[in-house]
Length: 388
Image (cartoon, rainbow, N blue to C red; front, side):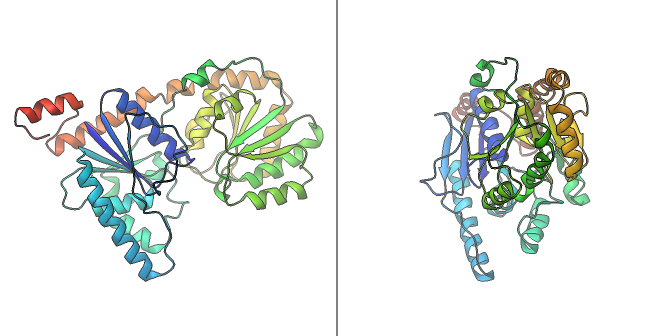
């Protein structure tokens, strides 16, 4: 089977992480994998790619300042993506994330190649980029071979025409070898950790406000927020205004998130909305007790309240502070939640999730007259004169 993935970039992000995990999983099973990105050729992927994976940057990223630029730029992107798909000769194209999904669906018209598009956020709360893009999404998604969403809540956003071809498949989690090798010794560092893009969606302003409420009672505790993004200056200003300069750290991105999690005592997710947050899965896989806003989708599907974490009402800073205080002051409770948190690896294992993906691919490829096969099997069919 030849799978061509399409995504805007391979920078730091949950959807990017999911794509790389899927690509490695199928590549390790002997399938041929190509990853097309819109990023420039000199942009180095944040995530390490195995040598067997083909990365094809198309240098198509950029914003449009007016309607003319919007039309011109996206027509060019569509032509380049179409040529790249034809050159790739995949059995199936899997596109991740809104605008790229629209462009891939437009580019693939008439090629006879199945296309699956994936929504990796809550479409009811995340704008694809204006009414023009929303209209294009509605028109193009209805011709996708399948639309994959992460939760039933995300599925409910779409109308009947799209829901008929849609399927819920959550993100999968597997700990890399370096994470498994890390010691899971008794935690006593008094460290709270959070990770994510420094953007409004992630609600780190709420986390800072909540931490400012509890810190006077727990002066030995610190908070570290790993990530980078457009809200850095705003968060730094808020940190200083709240008098947290000595105990709240914003060190930027990290290439060793599992190590940072293993060194921490508590993980907090303060997002205003989510898709199906990979970083929350990874924190729980590291046996961290977690607290999360019960935002419209994603978090509630992962955290089992008072079993392996704590859910608090969305965007309620006082409730978040109360939950943090409860866990910061009770090491026994933290350990009880941590012992169950690791079960997330079985609940959302890569094998289980990729099994759902392979079942979907089997249906899509059978409908198009193909089947899932390894490169050797494809070559044997071609040698016998059969279609690949």
